[in-house]
Length: 291
Image (tube, rainbow, N blue to C red; front, side, top):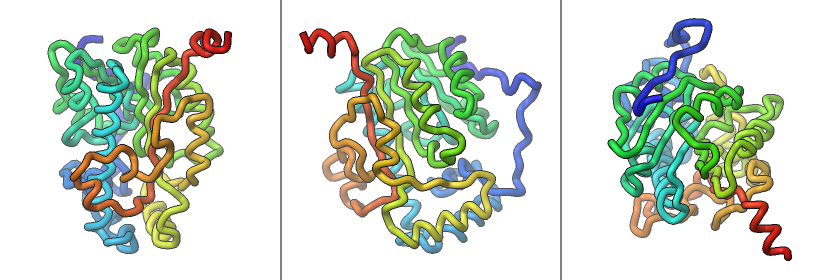
């Protein structure tokens, strides 16, 4: 695959039609971040659902910006301190500022990034707006996390799975009920990675904000095409089974290596989201250390 290439849609031919009669999580999030790739139904869903959110709509917009800032901090860590040069961002969402490849390539211009989403709006915007450095690569593939094998196969056109890769699963796993086997899916993705690879994720929390959070997502679930599943800290930690958690572990969003003096610190309040980064260990090193 050449740099900045968009893979074809479903093998059945053509992209799925965009349903503007029901709110879609990607477009709701775009609205909260001040984007324009949303429709009246998305704006209405956000305004009604987040009325119970601490701070109302302004509060959730601040939280959405904090979530976006977290993504930047984690990618900077991965490309910088961790030395990662390949990224697989699944469920990327509509492009905004400081996208994964932009942050990674500021640190390492040769970084290679593959974006994955199943929303045609996302991929159309990505293809127009996300441009790689000449030294690196940036690709966009149509894929659904429910089919990890297809994602891995397509991503291999751009990424070398014999070398470390960081998989980014930001704000996507909370749309998977346990019956859809999200732990199995994540384990399969991690299994395909070389030692020294990383998993980074964020997930809405069940044990923060209590009734206000429950009410908010009950309203959203009634209006959106996908339902939100909240999980506890221990349930989110399970996604990192077999991995070495990077300090500070599974924590609430503002607590993950905040930038001094940033908006994250200024607005540091408990956010209903867990986040963490884990590293795939090298079994050979563990064996040598035990000798």
